[in-house]
Structures are given as structure tokens and as C-alpha cells.
Length: 111
Length: 113
Image (cartoon, rainbow over all chains, first blue to last red):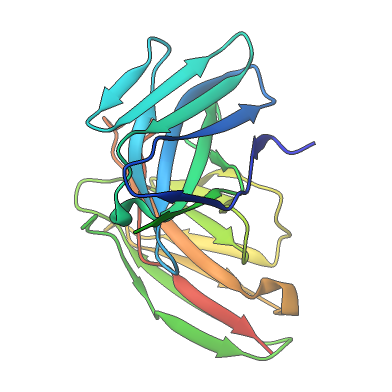
């Protein structure tokens, strides 16, 4: 079983749509959670951290459910520029900032 | 931009050769981590350096080694290259105050023939 699991997609959605990505993690000692965005053949870039209370950044909303070991990302009013691979990332307690990545979910926003 | 730079951007080697990749961390960041990203996969943690000492290692064999220098720049060395080492090799730096946030460089795309 992978430590961080994501639906690989691809998700193809029209501009303006709302799309949700889900992620589960296996290590209950995980303490920090992130969504990274990766454009084709580029490096991953931090999109947002994920907090237990849930957090929002513009059109992006992230949720964390520690009991279910589940993380989500909601993108509202999708833009063409949102097309990328979205990586779910977890850091375990005491792991010296070792980030564990899911395989990513590919999103294409269509005109 | 993150301020993290890597060189070279691309590299082609043959099986059995050795390679050294370089990373320059963002100013003020004293930890550096290296990750390997195979095609279609997420990055996999190789190891991390803090104050010039290895501070955590992932599931990679000893032929993957590293160094961190007093100016916080870093090297990833891979000996006896194998075909499966073809990947995007990424370094990421973090600040003492930044908890778990890491900032990635653009990566070195390594191809082993």
C-alpha cells in the first residue's frame, strides 16, 4: 500500500467548473500536510498548506480529516492556467522534514 | 522564484558511470533535501542535510551520497548509474523557521543510456 494515495486522473473539466481532488495517507503520525502544484517538466511548487480547521486561498479550499486520514483540495471557477498535476504531500512527525508525495492528479481545464 | 538553483539542467550518462549534481540553496536556508522523481510518479525522498551532516535518508542504496558545504550549497553523487536512475533530480531547501515548508529548485533531468 502506498503511503500517500491519490486518484491519478486525468481530470478534464471545462473552464469555470468546480473540481475536487482527494488523497489518503497511511501514517497516523503525519503532522503536516500540503498541496503542491507541478507544471509539465517543471519543479513542484507549494500551492497551500492544509490545516485541521480547513483553509481557503482564493478559489482553492483545502480540508484535512485526521480521523479518516484524508485530505482534499477543491478548486472553484477553474481557469485554463490551473491545468497542472496536483501533488498531495505529507510530512511525518520527527521525519526531519522528509516530504512524502503522492503520485499526483493530472488536471486539464478545457476552453 | 524560489531562489534555489541547480546545475546542470540536463545530463546524459551511460550505465556504470558516476554523476555529480549541484544545488545552491535559498539564502538563509540551512537544510537541503534531495528527491528523485521518475516519470509519472511523485518525488521520492533521497536524503537531507543539515549543518553539513546527513539528517535523514530515504530508501535509496549507498551509491547515492551527498555533501553540504558551509555556504549551504549541496551535491548529490550517484555511482554505478543504472537505467532506472533516469529521472528528474530535485533539491529543496528549507529555513530554520519554516517548519516543514520546502522550496524546490528546477531540477536536473538525468538520462542514463
